[in-house]
Length: 160
Image (cartoon, rainbow, N blue to C red; front, side, top):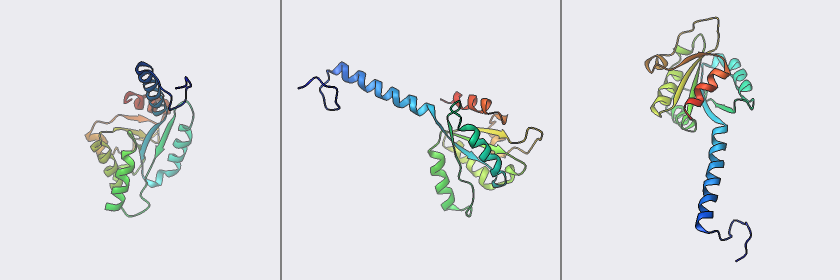
């Protein structure tokens, strides 16, 4: 056999183990570089959510937000789709605006995130107000922080 370095070349066991460790290490580094975060919010706050998404695109944060805002009836089909999307993430951020706490869909998303064992963080959209906190965040004693990406990112890193 040749002594090349192609994928089908023979490697002694110790070299094979090291190659495996190196490849899984690279994969872990890639996985930790970008955090998939589910974002729960009231649809009336969608403009602020777009601003959050654009801020998070910075290489400094490496966050990717996913949302599944209710643009269709809040029913079992929606819940099934939303449950699957939450499962693709490792954390959930609830953007808290004036009417977020009233939204049945937001409260369901938060409870589902907790059911799946995710980290859940509440973020106050407006720093000059004290908007009501959704009940699941209170019940689970979630951290509630102002809209400061450094602070949000630090909380997310605690879960890594």
